[in-house]
Length: 200
Image (cartoon, rainbow, N blue to C red):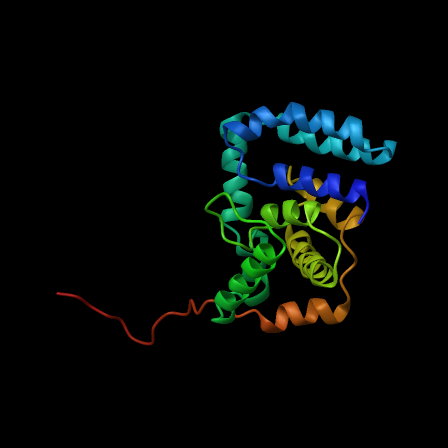
C-alpha cells in the first residue's frame, strides 16, 4: 500500500464517520490534506467534488442524511461483519477476531464503536503494516464496499467517497468473494407469526 492509498483511507475514515462537531471542524484539515498529499489532479477533482457535496448541506441536514443513508438501510451499513454474516451467530466470533487483529498489531480502539466499524478499519489499515492478515482484511472490506455501492443512489453525497476508495485503494473483489459474502450472510427473520398473539 502506497502513501496515496493510506491518505485516501484516512480521508475516507473521516468523511464516513458520523458528522458531529469535530467532523465539521475537520473539513478544512481534510481539504489541506488533499492539496498536500494527493498528486493526481484527476483524483483531487474527484475528492473536491465529494467535499463540495458534503459542504453544501447544513450540519443538521448532514446528520439526517448520514442516518438515512447508513443507519436505516442494512445494505448500506458501515459494519463489516453485518455484511458478511448478517444476523448469524458467526458475527460475534467475527468481531472478536477483528479485535484480535487490531490488538495484535499494537493498536487499541479509543471510542465505543464495534471493531468492525468501517471508518475505524480504514484508519487502522492506513497506519498498520502490510502483511498477509491485513491484506485479507483489505479484500474483505473490498467485497463489503462493492455491496454497499451496488444499491447506493449515484446522487448520494456519500457515493463518491465510497467509489473513490473502491477504485483507488481496494482491489476488485472476485466473483468467489462476492458469492461468499452473499452465501454466508443470514438475514433477520421478519416474517409474521403464523397466528396472532394477544395480551389481556
